Image 1: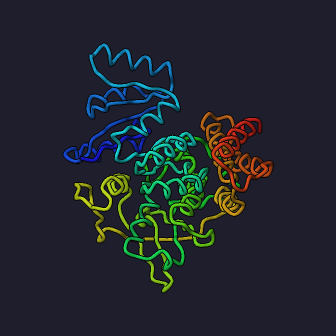
Image 2: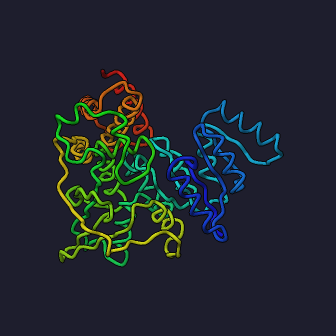
Image 3: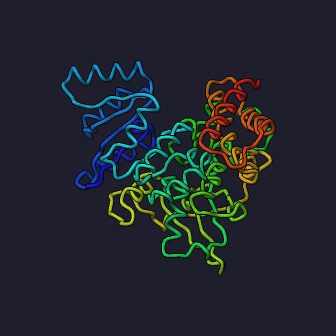
Length: 383
């Protein structure tokens, strides 16, 4: 039996991960679950999976859940805040932690779990974007596995199985192009929130859906890939592939390219992380190649979608810059979701914050957290 805790169990990745647990309940067991404020869904998850500990980030909401559970006679530890997330992440029973929360909040509990010797299934880009060197150094020191759950990074992970790192020429990350693929900069001036939230292929949370629309999601994946696969910056390319069938590719030094294909379904990357190094059968639909009419690829438009180039710039600058870009983007996307700013204000704010940042080249955790806080504050000040 493998014991698993999930940070962000009520989100898109978390709920799909629990479906995988349900399909394999004879070998997978839930220890801990967390949510921000969605306690109705969390309570249903408690009934189904019987975790020992749960975290509700909001303290007042945590008290409401705790009273409900006590009234029903359920013995579940209810914790709250960042300390609560860390408590779930480092629960002594954990064999594996799935970090599926959105945003920078995932960094500290993930680091804590690594330092406790717990393997990580990582579905939180920001952990490596902001703290890549810290996380990879900690993982190496603790000897834990860091298993990617993003579909693109899981694809690369699979393509590299049985191959030597020094034989990699480059990796090619695919992007759907989002809802605005083919739009010009002029056309993007008038797009709406409703349009931006209509992803053509994937069902995801609001923040990551907007990041897909701006191509920032792909930029964050570029930064994440550098750390996960120990690559040079010039070894990471992006192509637009609107069918979302090829999830990513690896080109080797002999110019042979291996691709991983599948239907757009996050259950497979989750399952691979949960069972690695084994593969297990499932009842998910398979690709029917006789029905695939075309697989197309094109260069991303970095002029109309400058967030991708900003991510490459942050990667080249190094130090705290990637974390600053991530923090600025989180605030800008939140403001766009609240309809305070326009779609094109997102890259504008990101660029302005980057231009003002004084980079710390070799940051420690306190430096990373301070840069993150600074970027959030200044991002809220831009109109």
